Image (cartoon, rainbow, N blue to C red):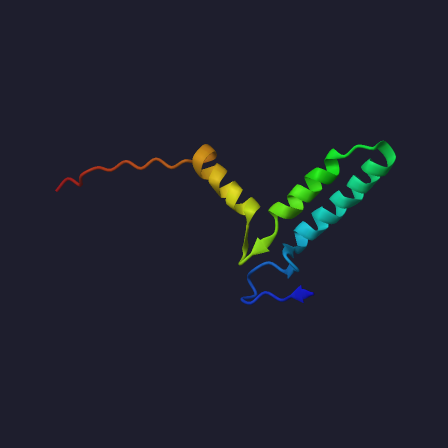
Length: 88
């Protein structure tokens, strides 16, 4: 079921994922199935399943977005505020 965005500025969503995430999950699933059937290599299917879980959208946010924002705040781009008295 295709859900049309309410405000025409949000990204298109199919079921619980954005369309870009559906594409990534589809390609990842294809590579994972090939890896499991041809080489018996299991990690790609685990990574694909984890990505599919982390990108589930609920009210225009996902767990992966939250983790990105948290890493940016705590690790990457911390902001430094200097409080000074205004000279009159």
